[in-house]
Image 1 (cartoon, helix red, strand yellow):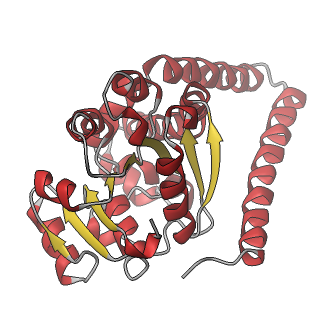
Image 2 (cartoon, rainbow, N blue to C red):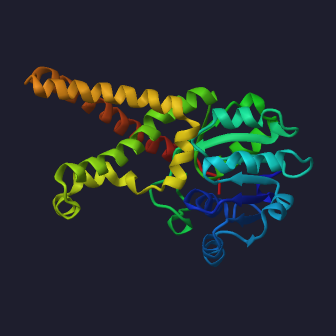
Length: 300
């Protein structure tokens, strides 16, 4: 089936779901949406991000492809309902940052092969449809996990949609994905929470801390605005990997503390230089991604 003829249903019209809809608008036939928050639905309708909204059951019956863009604890029950019935849709995909437990739970469902477990490395601490962007996924990496469990048709449809959005797809094992996310996504989020609390507790005054806080505090605590409703399910589903990441982080922080206590400038400098190199490698990778994006033609 040609992508331009698809009807896409987006369940969950927060920043990610609304950005999916906005990015695909005009590139597929119809976008239908559903969100438990009527304000998100209303915004998306008024902004022209979706063509129509309806009940969860009805949009799934209408759609050729269903995108589940909810918090991760809602992915399994929604996907289970869809994959327990035959017929439409042709493919279902999620955008969550935990994969292993979801793939295990869905493994026995009759239509499991329609489900493509995907995760775009995009988004921000800002929430809601009002923060959506049609270009959010442009030049971003999207992981598709355990593609061997999916039908060829489902994988082709979902990779085709990500290509329309300007993203680049890589295939990965779900266990490796969750280990990676614990280190590069989930740990930074939890550190941001901890740093925000520690900064105020150490001074003892919220007002004084906020008056003194500047760019460093801003950069390091930006993620702390993300809601508990989004992050508690992620922590629960990726608990063991996150705990291992915390142990490694504490180990490195202890090395820094020990070097400071012992006036060990050589070790402290070595740790800083090592961190400088890692940050530089990240910046180089981001720049390379931009260059690569400029060389590829994004489908309209």
